[in-house]
Image 1 (cartoon, rainbow, N blue to C red):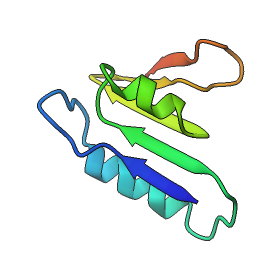
Image 2: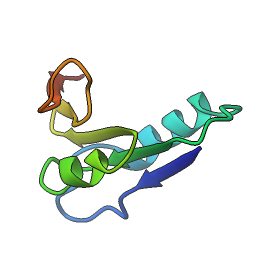
Image 3: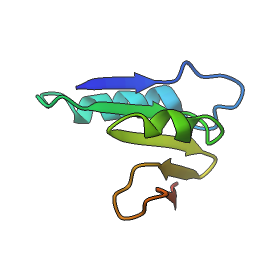
Length: 80
């Protein structure tokens, strides 16, 4: 398993480090050849997350899931 996270910048609108750490903890022990991306904005994040097997691009109160299988365009969900 490979976890990719953006380096953060002025566009980061979520607590990226905390979320990336939570994702990493939940994937401990996963022995699958997958790439997981956690990005901190909805500007460049969706494009970068789309390159991963599982991608999350977070924004202020929303998260984009660019590769959600139920929707070819991905999906955007409200988060709290």
